[in-house]
Image (cartoon, rainbow, N blue to C red; front, side, top):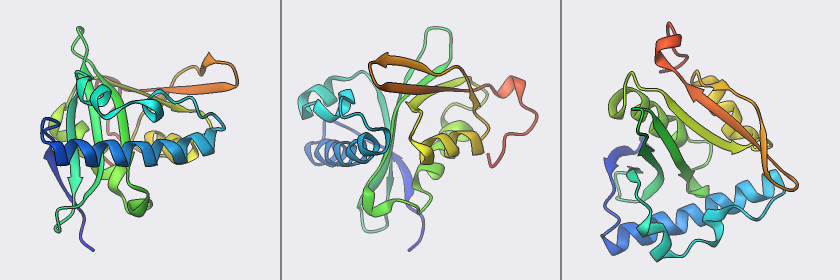
Length: 165
């Protein structure tokens, strides 16, 4: 099956919002299992709460119109980007959707800008993805008991040629 195409997502559209919410919950359920922590905020987020987030959204959409995954971010006051969520529908795992979304974002949506993201330190697929694409791992931190998070930064000014981007 060919790679999905990246397009902006409009969460005022009920069908788009429902698909994003469904995929987010499924993806975060897998992450919760991987990291041994079921308190991920997005897991308990209602559809209305998700839609109320002041985020920018893009999705990877198959030729058949199926949403395979999405990326949501916010712009920081200092010009940097903070990735809030990067989720892939479990049926699309291991098919390059997260890489496609992240590469598109780094090169097309916010080229040359510093980008930060966090993930559960035990979420090996996400940790590997960020490292592979040239993100630098910062110090781990623990926002809740029994939860260790890994922080990553992509700083294009400090990189001569990011891996895979």
